[in-house]
Length: 373
Image (cartoon, rainbow, N blue to C red):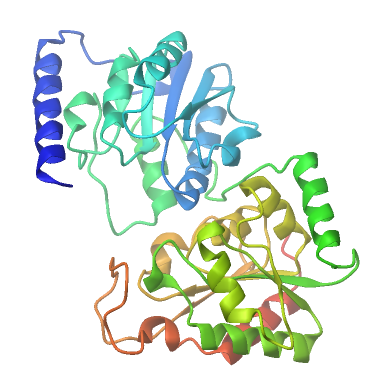
C-alpha cells in the first residue's frame, strides 16, 4: 500500500470511528438464532469461499426460516450460485467499486445480522455497518473491527474452516460438520463433457486432473517434477492427464508439457469454476498444489493428493471427506508458513523435495481405498 492509499484508509477509519461513537443503538443479543434476515460476507479467494460453506450450512440449520443473503466476489460467485442454503446472492464487484448500488441491495435485505466470514478488503466491515444490521460479527484483527458489535479474536492455531465455525458458535450457532460443498449445475457438466470430447478424451477413458501451479510462484511444483509425474502416470497406469490452471498459467503449461511424448490435455484458462468442478467430478483423481482446485476437489469428494511447501497443510487441508485426501509436505530448512511470492532459497526445496514417485504412489494408494460411506 502506497502512502496516499494508506492516508486515505486512515482517514476513512477515523471518519467511521467517529460515526460509530455517535451510534447510540444498543448491541443486540449475542444469540443470532432469532434473526429473520442475515447477510454473510465471503469475498476472498476460491479456497476461502469454499471453506465458508460449512458455516453457511450451519447458519441455515440454525435459522431455518431466516432469509440468508451471501455477498461473494464477482470472480468466485459461481461457487455459491447454486448453494442450497442461501436465498440470495449479491455480487461484490471489488474494493470500493459500485458502492451505492451494493449499498442499496444490502439495505433492501433488511438484515438483523451481518456476519463477515472472510473479507480482506477494507470496505467489507463498512458495508456490514452500512447494511443497517443491528448485529455485526467479524474478527477483532480487522482495522475496522470497531464497526462490529461482536468481534472475537482469531485463534491462528485452528484450521480455517474451524475458525469460521467458532465465530458462529460465539453467536449461538451449532456446527453442522466441517465438510465443504459446492453444487455443480447440469449445464456445467454438459459443457465439461463437450470440452473433453473436443480434446479427444473418450467418454470411458480414465483421466487424472493435474494442477502444478498456485496463487504465487512459491507454491508451484517444479517443471521437472511435474513432467516426470505425467510421464510415469501415463506409462505405469494408462491414465491420461488433464492439466488445469488459469489463463496466466496457459503459457507455462504449454512450455512444461507441450513437447512430451505423453503430452497431457492442457485446459488452462478455458473453463469457469463450475465447469472445472464438473470436469473434476469426471476424474479418477486430482493431484494438485495448495490452491483453488484442491478445495474444489475436497468439496466434490474427488480423491485428492495435495502437495504443500510454503504453507502448513493443517490449516488449509480441511473440508474433505475422511479417506479422500493425502497430503505430502516438502522438506526445507526454512521457517513455515512462508508468505513469499517467489522462493529465494536455491532449488526451491520445499516443493522440489516432493518427488514424482511418492506422489504417484500416494494417488494409487488413495484409489485403492474402499469408498468411504
